[in-house]
Length: 292
Image 1 (cartoon, one colour):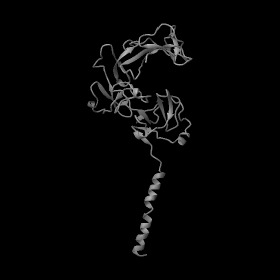
Image 2 (cartoon, helix red, strand yellow):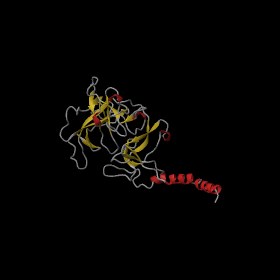
Image 3 (cartoon, helix red, strand yellow):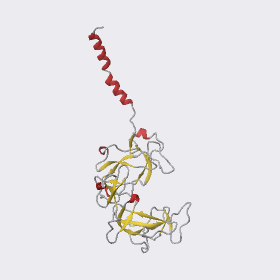
Image 4 (cartoon, one colour):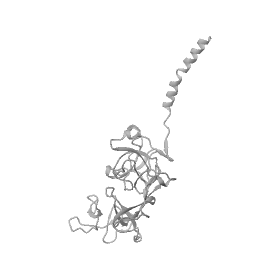
């Protein structure tokens, strides 16, 4: 075999090599993605989703999801269910929404979801998956897991990455600046309310001042808020009721696993300031509920 023949044979062998490499890469499954030690659930096709028995089924502390689905609390649906990711980038989301990495329960895989870009300012309360702009954080801000506050990303090693009256907390998927009012104090008529993760914020309080005055034995101090009213908060000394709990004391009725103050929607207003007579569903009793 002469040199020209050998060279031609060598080239003939090399030509299919890129095709072989390309085909091989296509056959390789995508490697799982991890962010800070937690797997990110991929975006599945409708056919792939149908293979998961737990897809869009309720989940929680005792009921898990088929991996790699994540157990996500969706404020819009008022439900916690098993799901995959919804997007990879902002380009896959509707106008006015952004693709965000959201933490899940049970240390399940986290998911990427399209959420609104909202109007809530830094240090205001927020909702992870808000129904509208009203409960969502503004551009460049993220809704923290700790306390549900809008905050900017920060460095745990550099306090100057947060503005005055904020501090950096190790949130997920990245550290965020959370508010604090414990040193600065609050305007007249407002109180410095402590929240999860060491955060605290000024608010007008409706209900008992149960952080200053502890609740009676067997009751817990609980707070509720409405994102559209960031300077207000509703508190109560919650007494649980229902299965495995004692009946409510006189003057209280059981509604949603908690003993509440009853009221008559047709009678005079007997609810405290900041509350209104409200019925959760047709079969529920009328009780005093935050006036939002």
